[in-house]
Image 1: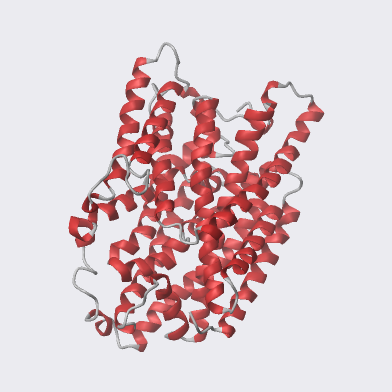
Image 2: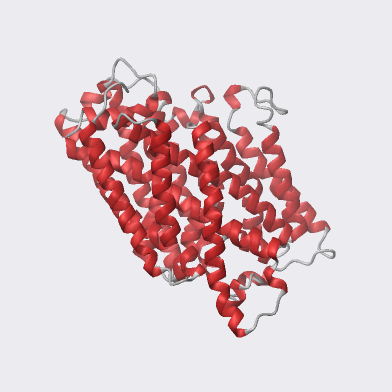
Length: 507
């Protein structure tokens, strides 16, 4: 943009200061406890868990990318983001939340360790780390880009400011900071999106004013039924989010933090409902842009900012801009915390320091919780440094972000699902399926100029759907062939170890 909106930018800065104060104030709730830092002591009620799940689902893609995607390629090119994430929360609520919450897990890779073995835990940790660092980078870049459109400030300095804000309040208050900031970030944004759509409809005389300008095929179901209109790609995106995001670190940290399995389950449905509501509003803004921006724009990310700053009342536009920034920050803080906990606990403590080998005295056991806190906070430094570097060099991660979640979808989902619901699932099969699915998905993508397994453009998205199927086939076959060599451990999903056992990394 060659013009800026300084008053609205000042409003966004005021909101950021409020976010920082609220998040940093949660430092007093940590009480030198790693478990309280990572999953808030596993004591959060329905409203907080539901709010945090909503905040994680409403990232920059579900708002900014949604409106731009609708304007660029049709309704489902944008709405696939909130739709897929909402469906994911429904899937988690129905099949995953209760058993995983009951197991007293601290991180998602804990499940792969407890149900299978340490190599499976390490591979899952690496795959999840790669995907979530890219996610953190993308959301920091989106928030920084918004700030740079409102102020005459370079993208790099805006990125440093956003990253510092998230880093400091997350490092101070952990999941408590995420919960408190999510409340002040998400609900004003939700109100702004809903009231913004209502105001636009009233101000311009109803939907008929906008409907005539929408191109043919942009507001129907052809985006899901016609290969020429990108149906395969849209379905691939929806399935990658709806099913693949089940293994999202940020979603699962919030499921683990719920005070009971039933609270975890209900919170997922709460988050899903409001995700759809805000997602529809963002998509409607994308459709309205065809009438309000007839000349078109080169950068589709600008659709929502232009409408917010140029066509709405100042207060409504301000809250939408704050909401877009908040959506990016709420996802970034959850991603940073999740990756830091995985590397601190699953990689450093369990597989490098190997703290589980030692028999602890009662005094030493009391220190385990604090040790988890220290090492998780320390891991936040390289995690954020890598994310900022990636955001700097690749401010629009685009296809890399899709690939990152596709790889987790391809490699990690099947072992998690069969580990919960198939008694014959074992470590040999889980690791084999994980590797097979990941390698196939990578072969569809690398090398970027000429993939090992190329697909015609109208079949893009099929690569997302085939890879987990291969993972499933390989895992089932290997499990059936290795039952004697590697007896399954299905009984562990019914066990609830105490905190001392969990913190010692034996479980």
